Length: 367
Ligand SMILES: O=C(O)CCC(=O)C(=O)O
Ligand SMILES: [Fe+2]
Image (cartoon, rainbow, N blue to C red):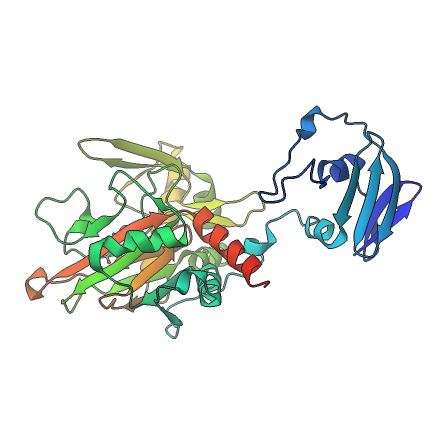
C-alpha cells in the first residue's frame, strides 16, 4: 500500500489498483488537538456541519505521515499506516479469525485454567481466539462461591441480564418454568430464540455434579448447516427464508420473536442458527411450501441430533463452559436426581463483551 500525491489529490495504490481518497474523508480525520480528543479518540467537531465541497490546498509526505492543508485553514498530519488500516470494509479483527468447523471427532480441545489475573493476559487473548475459532471454550478451576460466574462474566465484559435474572440456577426443581430445570434430557438447542436480540454467548458454570449422567453436549451449527447446504440445497434454502415465531411465556411476560432457523448475513454467510423445537411456530404457508419446510426441519433436526456431529463431556465442578449461542447448539443427557446433586449456573454475554476484550488485548500486547 502506498500513498501518492498528484496535483493536490491524494491516491492510494494497492497492487495494481489506484484510487483517489476523497478530501472530505481525510478532513473528517483531522487529528490536531483542536479536532480530536487524544484520550477518547473522539472528534471535537461535528463533520456534518462542514462544507462537503472541502478541498486540499497542499499536501506532502514526511516519512510515515501525510500532512495536509485544507482550504478551510485546517492542517492535519495523518499516519499512513492508520489510513491503510481503514481500507478494509469489514471488521478484520473479528471476521479475520477463521472459524474452524468441527464434528464428533473433535475431542482434544484445549482447556484453559482460571487465575485471578487471567483477564488481562495474553492467555486470555488466546482463549478468546479459540472461542471465535471453535465457538466454545472451557475454563477449569473457576471459583464457585457467591455466584462467581457473574463476576467472571463482568470481567470479560458486561453480563446480559434477562427476565431470568443476572444468572440462573440450572437444577432439577419441583415446578419449573423451563424444561432445563428438570432431570430430563435436553436435545441440542440454542437458548432463548424468542428474545430480540437473542443473547449471544452462554456461560454455564458447574458448581456440583454428583450424577453419572447429565453429560453436556455440543454441536457445531456451522458444520451442520454447511453440510446441509451441500447435501440438500433446497432444504437449506427454505430454512434460510421462512421466519418462524419463537415464543416463551410465564406469569410475568410473553416473549416472541420471528426469525429463520438458519439466518444469513448480507453476504449469504451464516449469521445465526436458532433451534428449539419446543418453542417454534411456523406460519400458515402454502401447503407445498410447508411440505418442504417440514421435511427440511426434520432433516436439520436429525443432523443436529446425530452422533456424527455431537461431542459429549462431563463438566466437573469449577469448569466453566462459554459458548457461542449464535453458532453452537447445546444440550445434556438425562440424569437421575436420586444419585445426587447436579447444579450448574448460567448467564449470558453479548458479542460486544468478547469483541471489546479481544481488541483491547490485541492493542495491549501489540498483536
Ligand atoms: O443442564 C445443562 O447442562 C444445560 C441446561 C441448558 O440447556 C441451559 O441452561 O440453557
Ligand atoms: Fe439451554
